[in-house]
Image 1 (cartoon, helix red, strand yellow):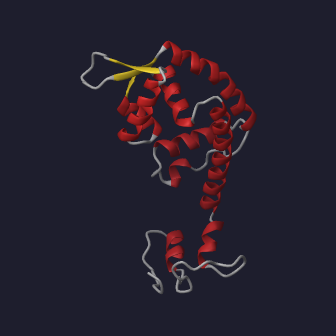
Image 2: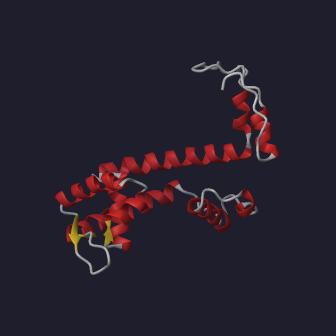
Length: 192
């Protein structure tokens, strides 16, 4: 694609991006700070600024919460599984995998470790599914009830309250990332 000059695009904003002459960009070329880079203009797009800011905030908060949970011998995935089983369980492995956005193979590894630690157990529930469900053991309930209030305290220290319309916007994005901007714009976008 180096040296190409693309012109077809579905809308005017995209057309501007496609019309950029990217001839100056070479594969594996490292741009010097302040140097001319036609891709740098993409970073100034409002949607890209929003995404980068949201990701930076997420990563900062995630790292702080993970660091504290690890001191309690609980990784974020382990905490999430305990959370879902405490508030929504019992659940089959497939449902837990969907909630954590991981493969069934990955969730199997997490579930086996939790079982070995005596925090969860398999149970049979009469459904159309033949696969086992998982629920917390008494030890798992005690573990979760011991760390959850501390975790919520940390969340409250790290997160400002966001207004309802902004939370609704984030919910819509998380439920359907392909939503058009027309369906989600107009919502408030900041703290109360």
